[in-house]
Image 1 (tube, rainbow, N blue to C red):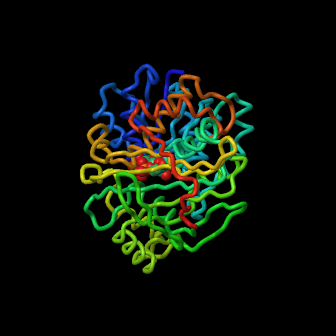
Image 2: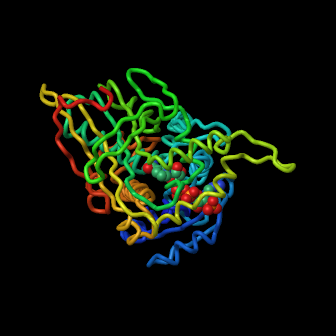
Image 3: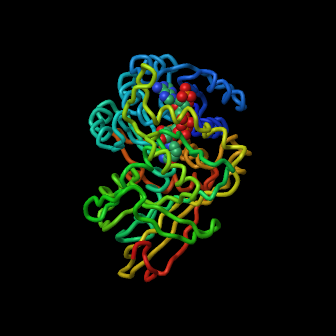
Length: 399
Ligand code: NDP
């Protein structure tokens, strides 16, 4: 495979484009496409090789399939928004290209992201000898691979998983989101959910704890629903419980509460001066572009999994995590660490497929593939991980 077509030129797209540019042996030919051509051109101007750039509306299956054919792409890396997942998958099937994304499909008119829309494509991809890799970002993505690594090397049975996403970075602005504001706010204002033999629902942000993170120190963490739990709860055979936690600062939560209370985060259309607008889409136009946070953000992210289970008949508990520095990420790719921690795994998943290391027809989640080459590439391409052995008797976050 020679040619990768990347669709999406936002924060994550900028990082992936830089990383792909650095690896000509794995990615000899590159096309960078998005809805707004000037954004592709601005990224291309930062790169050493000269990727082809193109304008495409990825909601349009025929136009996207034409671009895949015209560019000769073997694989499409979808770094547009979750709304485009299905149309890009359809275009890949039509034009005969493999597929990678970082977030599962979500209908625009319903804040409900789920693999139930993409898993049914398994048969159609398999029939055509094509592969679709779902969720090759950090969370989902690396957090799934951390589980696969733990299952393969550290445990006989995994019983409990807590995924902890800590962003200890500070951009100095009163309110901004680190990735697409619309997707981010839809995720956070939804009800919380975790899996314990079945799904348990909580009010948004109802459950929170404080946790002493390595490097970042003590932070308040909030239980959220996050998409990797949907696949991991199916694919880890001995699992008893999986939860997802994210850190939020007080200022962020206060702003969010006010915006919610006045209806600005709603996805229901309202009539304004004779035309219909969707409040959260309007809010997005007011908030800082996540890409603009790059030069402002200082501090680190600490994202990883606390995993508890059994090894050789004994209880075991480990913490597998990565620490990423916002300023270092910016120096290398002109983007902050949230985009960096997503763009690097997006490149690695694509690279493993382009090389044929990860290649099996059908639709797959990250934990269904051999974690070893991915874990090795994380260390090599900017997201080194470490494993801390914890006391298996130490209290669980919710004990
Ligand atoms: P941005 O909003 O910064 O960028 C999205 C890009 O997609 C923009 O270039 C946008 O174009 C383009 N786009 C939107 N709609 C279309 C369309 N119809 N056709 C073609 N291009 C389109 O988002 P991010 O870079 O922050 O996020 C990218 C993806 O990464 C999202 O799906 C997000 O959910 C996911 N993500 C995953 C994470 C993980 O760890 N797994 C973490 C963070 C993000 P335009 O500029 O014209 O609007």
